[in-house]
Length: 132
Image 1 (cartoon, rainbow, N blue to C red):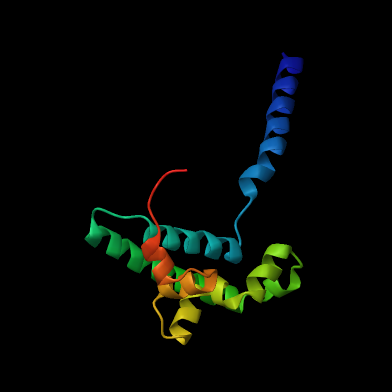
Image 2: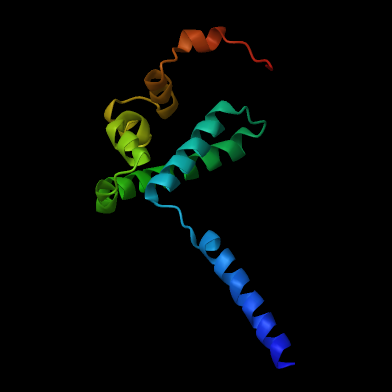
């Protein structure tokens, strides 16, 4: 009985050790900013049948994105990290801080993003929707 209990406890502790680090990983400010920016850009690119619901969601996403941009701009820990994702994000201000950059240039967010990516409105109008 004692051996069985000891074996059971050892297997439980072993599984907790193996599963512990995967459950503990938390996204940082920059990762959250990138995820929120992707959600916002996806909402611009997807044609939504319910425009009012989409507008409310876009407004919430924009506010959340502004807050995350402020957090990243004020995060001193990011400057100490020498990761490639941090270097690329901080070197490309206009794409990383999309909301702030669009306000500074007096443009719509989506229009500003299209310009930074190198897509013009005329090429976008000429594009066809289809599958590859």
